[in-house]
Amino acid sequence: MVGPDCGVSKTKPQIILDCDPGLDDAMAIAVAARHTDLLGITTVAGNVSLQLTTANALTVCEVFDVNVPVHSGAAQPLTGPTVDAAEIHGESGLNGPDHPEHSRSIDGDNAVEFMVETLRANPGAWLVPIGPMTNIAQVIKADPGVLDSVAGISFMGGARTVGNATATAEFNIWGDPEAAAIVIGCGHPNIRMSGLQLTSQFQVHDGFLGRVKAIDTDAARWTHALLDFLLDAVAGLEGFRTSSMHDPVAVLSVTHPELVQAEPRRVDVELAGVHTRGMTVVDQRSRAPEAPNVQVGMTINGGAMADLLLGCLAPEDAS
Ligand code: RIB
Ligand code: CA
Image (cartoon, rainbow, N blue to C red; front, top):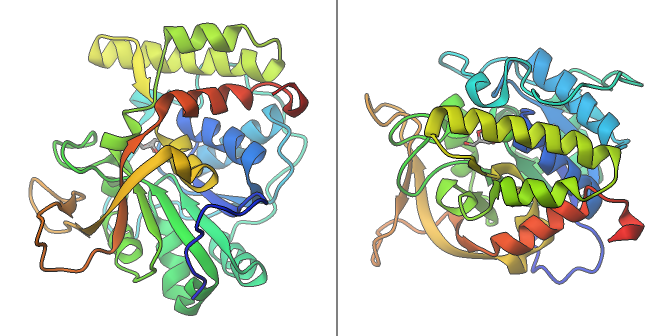
């Protein structure tokens, strides 16, 4: 079993980003492209359909000039209905800016096969799921031994207290609770959870948009339109123009672990509850009977993360 990355490596961590673009997924791709050795992007249905999340991944690759393999994955969860979050991300899943033409198509439609092959060929890589974890669960079911090649799993999902999809469930877990239970319960020694109470410490608002507007690049102009749509959508639902920047936190937890303070906790996923299906039950008792299985993010330096994201909107030599 490859041991946990102790965060002192001088080279960029190798990751596979599994996503459902998605406005914040788009920002996570930009951060991963700049700060990781991005081995590939895999897509899953979540915020919108698989067809749209896959097209959106290609769009984001065009905008940020990301030349890595893109493989589509699961179009629906292991069990249960498909979900969507179009009320936040728009019907396209990437509303706001115009979408550039794609200069290429995807590299394959078997994300699970791509991930197994790539992880076995690159021992010490990370899995970073930022949508429903259907693809990751299928990797574990198809080849449990591949986990020995994985440095860690850093996922955006779950909640220590209040959910967003329901009163108790966060969207990514709610989108495929069975898959989340397989991943969180897989026994890997280095699973990191970036849940809602962590990602809410990284807020984008009109002040952040003003800083984006000051960056004279096409990527920054595209991002400004994207995040302006996000703030409008949130204002329409919640009454104020500020939003958690969820997905980049799971990437930055790998690239900049010094920005995250986490605690070992026992985490289980509720599958049967009438009101709690998809809830991540985080045992925060001082004498929890079950051994911890997840490093649960507790606090982040949200300001430093905002600076890092802004840096990704400018050319690398400018930062
Ligand atoms: O709950 C937030 C998560 O759900 C993020 O990954 C966002 O993209 C949506 O998928
Ligand atoms: Ca997402």
